[in-house]
Amino acid sequence: MPYAPASAEDRAFLAQAIDLSRRALEDEGKTPFGALVVIGDEVVGRGTSSVVERQDPTAHAEVMALRAAGTHLGRHLMEDAVMYSSSEPCPMCLTACYWARIPRLVYAATSHDVAVNGFEDLQYYRQLALPNAERTLITETAVGGETQETAAKALASWADKLPFTVEPKL
Image 1 (cartoon, helix red, strand yellow):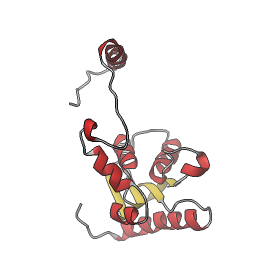
Image 2 (cartoon, one colour):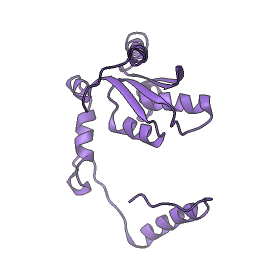
Image 3 (spheres, helix red, strand yellow):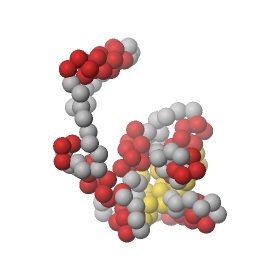
């Protein structure tokens, strides 16, 4: 992704996210990641990495910020928000932003910076780019036949109850 000049607003919110990451490390002994969800000029969610303290591998800073924003806003879709992160989100956090429909993401440190300091983000991005059969970090097994059909029927039952026609996302 090409670098773009940050606006004064972007720099101010990134400074807050970086300060969150610094305080997480220095004051709380956490890994140095911080994130904000912002709507307009209001911070509606803040997060730091809480993986170890919560014993939850999904409790990354961006996910925690999205959870806080969802609670604050009373909704899970944030099509009017911007995610500010102290570093480029890992694949899970980036995908969480997609699920929340965050239209804009602004970060400071890159995945390369994160990898140089011992985090696996780039390795995970590379694995996800491979076909399932070529991935080496996890063995994936899809079970077909009646088991697949039963699971697919549950999905179809959900879609049939929606008040609109589902558009396949193939």
